[in-house]
Image 1 (cartoon, rainbow, N blue to C red):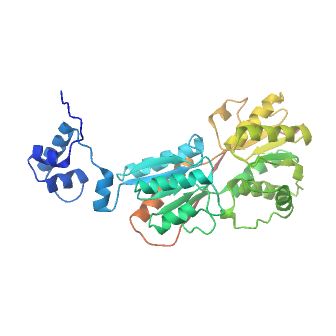
Image 2 (cartoon, helix red, strand yellow):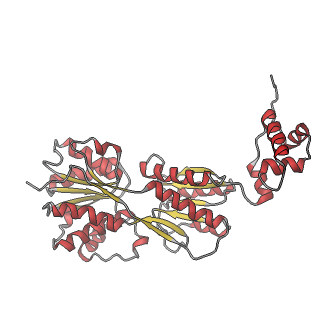
Image 3 (tube, rainbow, N blue to C red):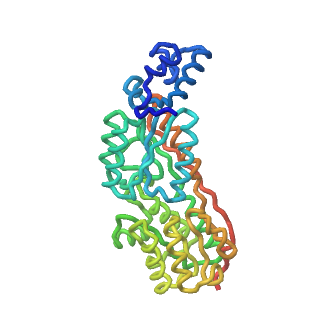
Length: 361
């Protein structure tokens, strides 16, 4: 049995294969030319010795480590899991690995994650920004010549490629389904991060965002879709039906929904993402309400449990996997030094109709 305690070196691989160190390096680094027979000798020797290439050392020679870094808000979220799968599938075929970190929607943790990935010498970064007002860590990454692509959100003033969802159109379509069923009192539960009640009231009244749509958090874009659906139908929005959660928290969403159901008596509810939907369902179940008999419901994000509640929950299904593929394509293009202005790809969601919408009683 091999009692080796130290890592095998490329010199030892070359010696066992009977080739030069340079030749062994070309074969194991997948660059330059070597005959099929030589490649087999080198790879067999590497397997025998248990040699593993040092990607970081190779990066000093080639300028690449063949890795990309990804920072997401919540690694447990099915939405981000779908994006990560799309990224991994796309870059694997190009010989790249993926290092994934989690920000927990916290700016300080995001900064630490980006710094860690830069120290690992990643060839590019994919980030779902925790804050959209500014991101010094991403600006620093770009200044250091590390390509950055944003997904789901865009930081103001940070000119990079990005992959986004048509949040306004998707929410507009979903809420229209409730309105077409006869609902006039439709509640909405959303994070609406960083806003005061006065800001929300103004937004509800004017429907005029202060910033371009791409610089709004997704929940604000979805609120706009909710408002536009009402305006198109000639319905006035009761501001008390709009509930701000202000954090990505199931328990906070549950509390906001309980207040909404006890104070304003909506006949239908629209939730702005998966966490909001889960918290809302806990509140609905706690009050003993039946869907759709007592309350119609449409959710943003199509989660697994939505197929099994009663006759099913109608939902907006985000193309998370496609978003991951698209953001990886854009990043690889920048890693390959392809020129061009920043590109924003806007993907469409699918409305999945189930049995959670009926006419109000």
